Image (cartoon, rainbow, N blue to C red; front, side, top):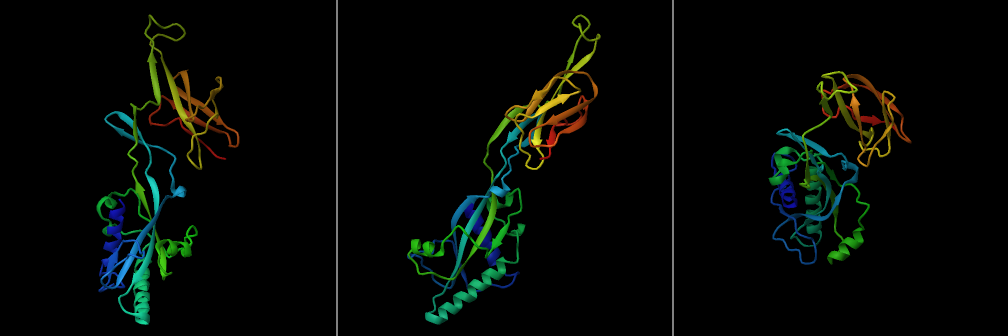
Length: 281
């Protein structure tokens, strides 16, 4: 993944159809430490940090339906990749500093044209990214001390800027749940019917109560159906009722800190998750 991200950046910076064109400039992804070597004017993009983007974390599992079976898949992990971008020149003294500044400014201008990486530059596994790849250029990285950074690398401080890209990484965690069930039907034949008319159908219904803002399941919510005894949602926010007749019913959910919600439902349901309820804080 990270190698393909490097190659994606190489493809973008080497593109001669977007300005400025960085002619005669090499590209490196090596640590710019005291052992760093280069043969010509070079831009170095050093991947120094990788961390989860918690703002983009999705707590809701992905449900996939295939061949009559539902699987629950963990959403991709959204990861911020931090690069330190520096420029290097073979020229001596002031001429070298001037060339490095020109190269660094060119890279900054080229990368700043994009808020997300255009799809034509994506390489390898990056082609299969499920989301656009955001790119933040020359924004402050408050978690890093430049003095400590260069000291750890054994280098004198240099002109640089921070580049951050956010990629999605598939955790590959999937659990087969079985066939989808929103309504179950029990048909009582005449010889078995006691409390229901012959050939009558009764149903069981179930759903999940969630926080409308975060889509997080609400544990301990109280759910009622047409005045029946209250059901309390479990650790996954689920509830169930049995012995329901076909037709229209009123489903009500309440939870501490949330506004109660009542919704009209039809039994049996025509859609998956038809009985799920979202509560507003």
